[in-house]
Image (cartoon, rainbow, N blue to C red):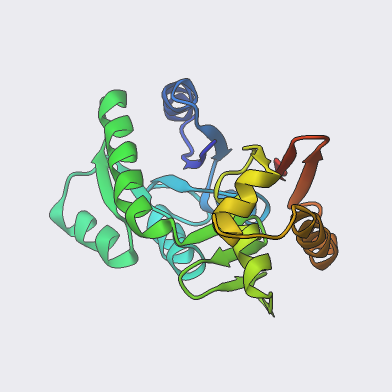
Length: 225
């Protein structure tokens, strides 16, 4: 499930966008202003942000700039204005797209889907599970402050499971995907590597867990926050 941040001080706009996006399977996290949106992002996994420009405490331009400094997610700005100068400021602050009020909900949905397609071309190398970030391209796992030095097979196993949260992988499937079809050992190596990963990330059980489905295999469950 993709998680969407909706920051707008107009409850009617939030209700409209919430209806459209939840119907499409998004989990919508709402904020009434920029300050509240920052708190939401610190405690929730957010995959895309829809932000109103005119908000109290921290306006949409400031929030957009904050997100760009701390997260790599697509951003859509909502505004009642259709002036070139406003759009220019929005793009300078880091927005990916701009939608002018009033808008058709279906158009907003199309834009959200288009941004996901664009981001997913490069974002598949980055996997986030709340505090934990897995960088497949650079073979790194970090919590934003320190980097975990994992042996290659542990890294590949964690990345494979995390790429598809909630999906159940059999031990045979994991051996084929991580160790390769020519691997001649037994499936106990999967058990050993799973146990090592659990030990390494024991302090992050509030973010995710590697769950055993007895007699079948394993899956990663990312905690809802």
